[in-house]
Amino acid sequence: MIPLATSTITVSRVEAPANTDPYDPGQPAPTTIATGVRAVVSPPTADATLSGGNKVVYAARLRCDPCGVAAGDTVADSTGITWICLWARRVTAVGLDFIEGQLRMVEGAT
Image (cartoon, rainbow, N blue to C red; front, side, top):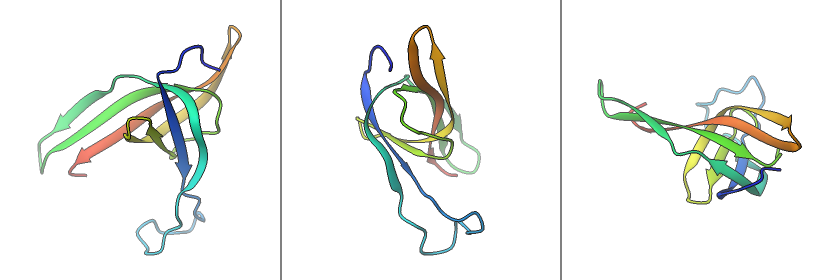
């Protein structure tokens, strides 16, 4: 458990068979993995690209109570911002047990 939480998150995942084309119509709906998980999402950093349109990529760090979040999951924080989890790992040290990971959000041209 993290000692101090500044937010709560909801984690959802689309569980599709490995041979499914993500551009095919009729993709399965996301499944909620966890909700109301205590978390800290760091202030984001941004990288702007203006070639071929406006594109801003935000990155943030996640620290939360253990909840089963994994790479590729969608993480929505209590402010309504939706992130994609790039990686997540469990940390057990100094009497603490939590998940840390990297989040990304892209706005504009992709």
